[in-house]
Length: 416
Ligand code: PLP
Image (cartoon, rainbow, N blue to C red; front, top):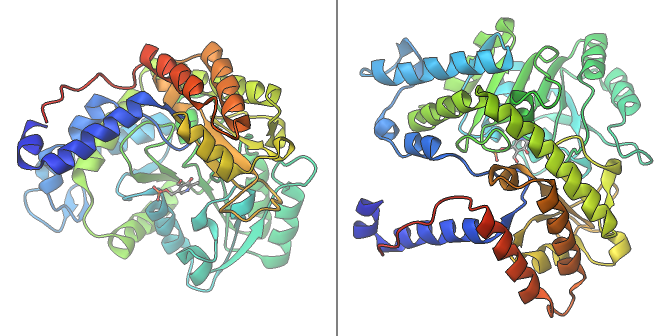
């Protein structure tokens, strides 16, 4: 850091200010976490310099024998952690991991079936603004209006009607467990590839806190930076029979050289996930999400789908008369960072939204427990109802006290 601070105080200042922001607020974005110093060390290493197109032992550049070790170790750890036949750590992001899966199994114009974005899916699952909605015929399923759980009957009906080449489950705002066995059954019936986008919940699978999709799916794509707590990036695991097609789709079809510093950091994170403490962490993430959801329900925020089995909850704010956008801004002003989120069948546009999404991965990394979640829920309730901002200072002070007792990272020496 000293080299950065002396050469470029502007960017060094950004780095320190972001650290201050992380340390001084409550980070409840469901897709974020605090990665470890060991992972950050690998990310900031000279492995960033190396071109290594190809895979370990079969590269298009010389001098790869050292970085090969990082990738091979990481692949073996991923296979062990997930009980998978094959793993690939090269996708630069979750979107790229999905791009690789589409590249391996679909041709432009082919039909796939996935969850609609407004019901909890992801942009890359067929939204019109994404490559996935532009290049393919994306048929979309949603949740049952009464239960707000995935409508498996609709999935089956749409699969029979459209005969998709691939069916995708997983998403960005699904609080409940997904029944992978039902998806497998539907895929087998119509002869579709089963893809699970486990970006959000793969960390809970790694920590054995929820059931694994790996035995069911042809391919499981994921991000490495959410509950998993690794570096920002993507990866996938798959059945051995698809390994060649998927590897070729990741490189050279969709990407060039892998980011070897990120691959090494993924390997470090996978080692962390193999430790028994990580399983305790994953269980606590779920317990905290449930405590937070119960607390928010007591504050008059309705949990979509009746609650959560995972690390995130979606809250319907309509009974409070406050929009998702206003709730996000009011909480943000008091140091509580969360995001507005569309709820299923939302009458508001996505930019306003009737809901918020909250997640427990980061606060759990900080060591907070159910008691803290109750307090956070009460602070969120107060902030959301605080239309004139008169209670913002009081909420901010309580937030500072909470995070002060559970620092995300040590305080840096301010040399600049
Ligand atoms: N898939 C799902 C379900 C996600 O939630 C996300 C990101 O939030 C992605 C894919 C894309 O990941 P990335 O932002 O790394 O491209």
